[in-house]
Image (cartoon, rainbow over all chains, first blue to last red; front, side):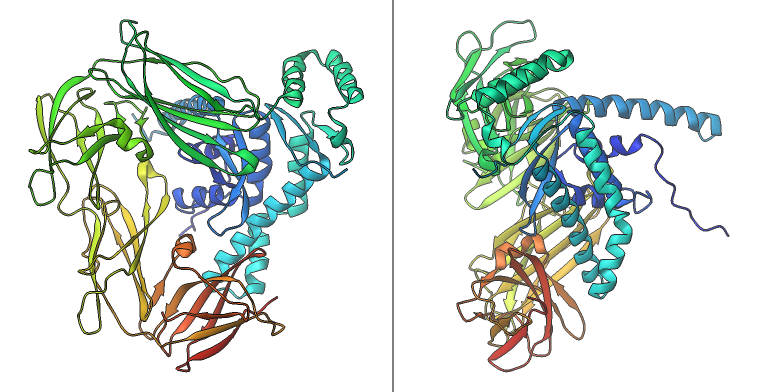
Length: 112
Length: 503
């Protein structure tokens, strides 16, 4: 029996996942990594460090903002928060993703 | 002149010294690796193996650091030497910047904002203004406007609540509220009789232009809610307010923070009734109800009837009784709850804390929600008694509990906390995090540690009567260098030296 293989993330999807992780509340990078791991039930194969260039890129685009706060462990930590611009971007990306995955499902015969 | 670490973020533009940026990247990456290392140690790996594994999971640190720098510098960061930043306000610097502005036509707007920011007075406070109209565009007067104002002065988070009513033109103005020198955020919630509750949350970077809030309210149903407690009796004279309102088949959710709750001005009468015309048909509502020490959330969907009975669930909430070994109630014990849930498939973890009453009873209104899949960790700490915890997972459609505890006596113990070199760890904050008995591990999560922390004296001593002799104890040491866990077997002696393992 073939072992379950954890797939690498599809190109461009990491940005959307980060924005989604920040939808409800600000998080620091480590909390984002844990969130992705837990919500995907440990399925998504994300190199943890790769989050950070993406976070800096998203901040440069104005989709997220950052501030230094105090973590649960009383350490200084950099928190990220979704900006109004990012909220709009997330909506657009989520909708595009939904359409794409629906189309792929249809092609693969997973969905009528 | 000392280097400034002040930040001026302007969309894709950032102005700060390269040293500050590099240091922040390093600090952030180190924080991640340390967190992962600590988690791996807690899962059973030895420290060296945990550190190696954390680095492996992180990926190539140097490469990632380089990519972070590229992400920042690649979009036109203006590098300033640490000495040069102090000269930012000098005429020469402004002239140089102005020259650069002429060469960078697409970035003119951002640079003008930045120059304005450099000359801005952080003491100047601005008004927050807004307008409220109904579905036909007519002004809504006398609406309650509830504001949660968040700001980060000096990098520290601050949150305050304000309220007022709209004037005859439907306008509102919170005077001299915010400074544009720091990041700010506003949650504005509008409650107007006959109109559906509405809210808007906006976050602004420093020096951003804050907009005028515009609310266009939709009609609401006239409703009288009959509020009943878990015993079925009317809850008279209870303060109530809408925590959230989510319109039917709509992803948008309107919020009101508990901090504004009493400002909403709704209270049940002697029959437990309260009139509210704030919701539309089919809305999913979370109504917050408080009275004396009771603090509940009632979830319901708004129906067509003018009078709707809503009740505190009899099975929801994390509740129980704490007794000692002889069965007597333990009053004023600290009860800690960690609630893990997966709303809309997304994991979240929330800490709560309360105390037992004179009868040893406690209750958390949040948690043990029938409709939710949850994991609940309840820990009970009382000086003189060995602390306990219980961890329960439950599926949606189930409830759990009661969460009762019978605590055994603890060994009376003064711990002498020392660094590896033998020097006492004075004035250090410590918290019990685990006790392993022959049959079970009892846990207190780090996010609850501040509720049950102790401080060592000048000799590194701390009285901590929460373990039994024979336990393997885990202490969480909270020091400026970062949290650290130490483990030691608890003996029956009144004083015990414990080495923190590393300086």
